[in-house]
Image (cartoon, rainbow over all chains, first blue to last red; front, side, top):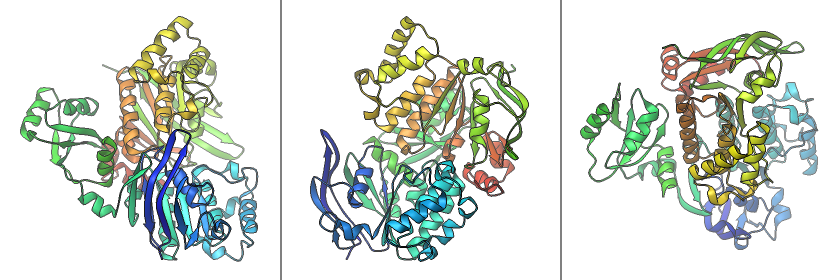
Length: 301
Length: 247
């Protein structure tokens, strides 16, 4: 039995189509990533999976339970961390966790082993109001609250937005550990390095899934030539490369710019063209596509 | 030619009780520079930024922003800077043009100028048909672009951007950075915080705060060389992991 089975679901708000015939399955114990632009339908999807809103069409089962008929049973098995911080700002750290434990008929003590690794960072602040925590701490508390009733499956809607790179890394180490403990995880993220750490990734755009693959297969499916270029004049370089014949798509990529090419592209001609425009310290090499390049390619379509 | 200094701080410090949030930081930012202000959550970035924006008084230390003294002339500073944050910038239940009108009015711009520049801006953003749209119904990426445009609408000397691209997908983030480049090329100084380390690479210079102090400052290339790192991500991980302050 798959952990999640989604069949042909659609959801609209008035004239706005949030989800348009989405189907997919998530395996037991899988770490499943969802990436896509803002407004692509990610949050609606999470809310349907969490039994919080109803799809207009289609069926969803989670752990064998129907999200509509069996929602009460299902809610005991789901942990959901929404994109917006949704804990009680004026309860303390400890009170929030106690509250969520109590709602699910359990205690912090009973399930401490599940949250202990994360909660230990919060112990020094356990009397502090949740609203007074920094971004990284809020996110750790929200994860604890989503885990305290021992769910089989965890939904995380952009859990690391606003979180610094060190805390992000720690957060993903925690997720990997929860996965080893057998928890199925569905996570959305705007960070492509995080997408890379998932078993499979679904790309969602305009309410449709446009591909579900392992990160490796997504990278391999990148089918156009890709280059990396750098000069002493990076701002100007972007538009200069874009204006050159045979260049399709050029975008900033960390310390270089990446660009894809089509028919009629000539590397040596680009080099002398850029030199002619006064670019200094030029560097130009073929590049290997990353998940981020694949995303950029799809976003253009 | 010596470039004009638009932000200058010396030994800037902020204490809350016996907690030193910002601990004797000193640096300069020059006109038209894109200055990245990095640090872990809780390192003191927001507190430092609030002092630079005239919203909080330093406990000690001195500085000028856009030529005004941060310990005395904070009202003048507010008039000469722009500010945008991912968390709050535009009024959701005002229309696009109403948001522009409101902010421009607060900064004391004349009605005729506002009208002319509003048309210009909406044209340039290819946004004219959204003039009467409520901001809450715009996609996040559009909101950020509009918020940024509004923050520099009154042609400030400096714009402060607090995590402007948080939660934004890779494609939209890049469009946003191209707007930052354009503003910098027009001579507006950009002071920006981000948690995306590829964006740190797009800055002219970057500072990294750890436990209230600035532990590193330089061009991305200099920092990578100094810390023998391949990327800004590695530089950041190396420095921020040394933090003793839990946030």
